[in-house]
Image (cartoon, rainbow, N blue to C red):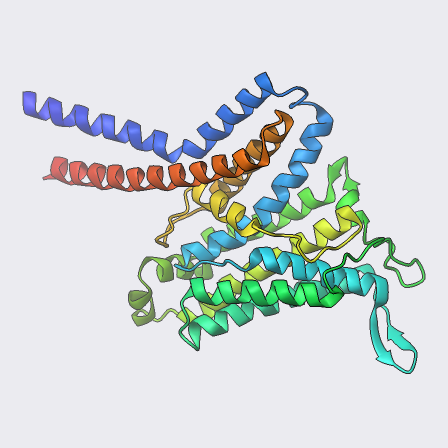
Length: 352
């Protein structure tokens, strides 16, 4: 009787610990928000919350795409460079259109510019997938190479200079481009509405469609997924192209907010995306992760970054703190897996 009671108590303790570990991202968000609300002046002011929400949106877009990639068992180091290159493409089209020679050029309206930029991001994602699936290049190396190619191409497009004054031209319908970054609908920034749409679509794909189940299956055991009929290569094309799409959206938003495009935009953004995904419970081993958790993780990174800036913490220390947060997230994730395994064993023993 005593042994049974002890076993039951141990199972209860493990279950309680597991619940805390699963809720770690929400707990972290509450703690960092409370800390900065207490020690950072005007942290919870309406103006700062609007600015912070825009910063969070940028991280969240990339983190959503990164979540799909990591869940499938891969990694995408190129998203930051995709942001920079797509921003430069957008800036060039707004300012110059496409020169066809003989003094003629093709000009585009805002919607057409956005569609072209998105196509560029998706195309780069497809290149990543091609290198990984057809040429058998490891995801880390393939996307690292693409990172350098995309960044170099962005630099070459303007010789390293900025495309300034992206106000567009009313005659061509491109004057509304800046509204994407500066406008709002019902007092909510346009970028937040875009994030809501992308987040809902991504969550639906992950949880309600066969494609979502295939992504988790490939990340859990690629060989077993292939043997069970899953089109593994198609799944990989989707996740990398979706990640490229998210990078393109961020490039559009940033260049619109700044009314300028610089080739170095997006530098190290991929690290924030990975950090947000890991904080949100996505396993670096693949096969596990949720879009909702990733978005909460992006909020943690965004609140942490803006709070440290408002407290006047050095950018060098901010980098150190972010690194420690990533390490802590991975350590806690490993602890969660161990506790889950222990709970499963205890439940099996109780049944027997």
